[in-house]
Length: 99
Image (cartoon, rainbow, N blue to C red; front, side, top):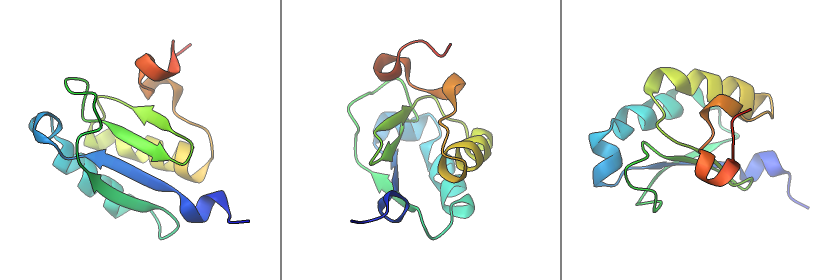
């Protein structure tokens, strides 16, 4: 059985709307902060236009919306390294209330 950590991916939408909202800087921040155990991928549209930049952590299917480059540190430290999604930043459409 493959370790969940070794197959973890962070998809950062790079489609038109997300790019206008700063997704390229978010992608760069993840690439700089994430270790070799996490694959950071520039993805095509994740189907949530207008809520970006969108970030999807796989295989857990944890969605983050409106991510700013300076928030990548929190996601990296708390979620990718610590195993606990950053509740205040979760995409409410898929994860309900942030409470």
